[in-house]
Image (cartoon, rainbow, N blue to C red):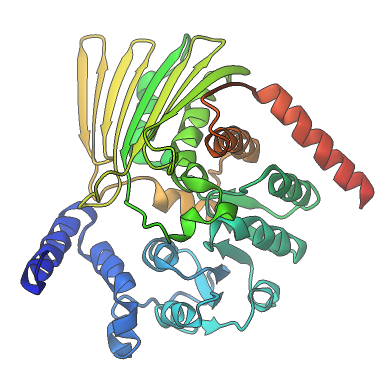
Length: 392
């Protein structure tokens, strides 16, 4: 068993390593996010990274004040929006996040934060099963919405949210961030006009999750919704550079029947000859957090993205190498979507969610192979939403 000295040394090493990956300010913000029980007793420490946003900026409410909201959403919102109110079922989490935004107040209920007159946009970073409810409520209140992934953990939730989106002129954006990364943007530029089938391979070393982690709750959609959805969404986005094939054959293999979403391999082949493979493994805890290796072959382009810190692209005899510092998985451009002209088509997010829900059901039911049609899934969604809208 490691002693206290070993633990302190490992924390110091991690802090130093993260600084080389994310830069000093972002690393400090991440560290303070993990130390909020300490900063509660020392308020000045919690204000080290606090922001004082311009009064002219759009005003945001934050629903869900966990580590992601504190260390990532808040970090990238600091120059584009004012967080004026926040809510979390853990009030201490909300209090500590409010302390990081000058003038931010803590709401007693989510509905109070959403309905506030001084809120223009609602950011949602709560537990996965609650995303849909909060997003629907915010749209109904006449607010713009940014909802973290996944946008839904069931077909019923997706139908409700789609109906809400189609019933309003308010804008909605989603937190799938890999398509907004600098590496994917550079790859898109290299690929150019694409034709022919895509081969995409994603290998992910994920966090180890305890048996009591909230991701394990049956209502939260498994790690397919919590993690794998990222790379399914990336595949849907990239295929959209050409066209999204309709028909897919999907296989799923897992190494442990008691935790089918922990060490799982997915293989998908399309009627257009595309090959997509995704492996999520969590046999040990990555020292630097989730680590991703992404390999692509498409047309004349071969590319390798190493943890969104480096990329090598071969195109014929031409070799291009790029380094990304700080590490860029696209969080910045994804989170600031509502304040820029660049925004992903919502239909693309719906498509990736339909695929994700199908694979979630495969894993939940221990179904090793199946077929999937975007056209059929879309037709079912449209029919259910149409019926719901007519009933209003």
